[in-house]
Length: 281
Image (cartoon, rainbow, N blue to C red; front, side):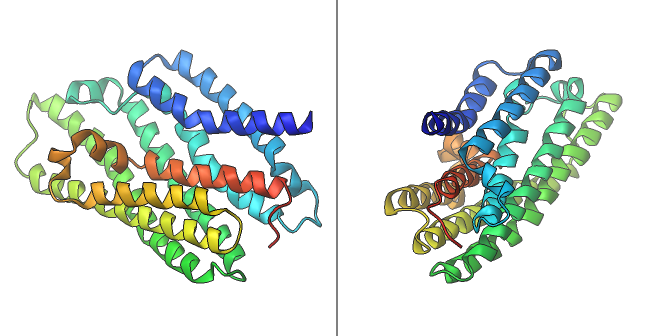
């Protein structure tokens, strides 16, 4: 029965990013009276599933894997937070739509700022635990990349969550239908910042996947899956004019939720391994 509970917990945690994405695209924005209760319920279920899967080992003060389980939890928390996005849908495409949902859009990007902090904390714990393993070198590269990209992500999310809503409010109050000329150069800065930060993040996650494989925590297959996904996403991100040539793939791989989801699955798998007592650090 315990094995069945852990398998069901793993399945549930694995499906959360999928149903969040599908509902966000298919349903779009819905009333907060619907998505908030569902989101809170989902977070509760995710905590329970994480506890059953492996987080329960933190109550054992003698367990050598307890801090690894906590680090895995830090990587899972961002998806707990961003699962709210199933009710927010994609960001609005017009100024008027932004104005109608301004508060919710600000909450969206605040959630992403908090999520970025937890990603940094999670990989920080992993870096500490990888120091004494064969994955030490690659964990240094991965952690360095993550520490470079997280401040950029936070800055970018603050711009989206604070600066742009205020700009759109001013435009609406002034009766402007198009953004002012002085905003265009700044928009180019934002457009460049996004692929730069995301490309660096994919590099960091790939390096951690190698480090975890070198440490013997993951087998070759799952590690290669992470590395290949990161490589493909990196290439799509950095190819010149890919936002025009590969519009949909470019949008998918450059939203922060995509690399956060890779970190999430690393966390879920590490939590399972820790619960299985298959990792000793």
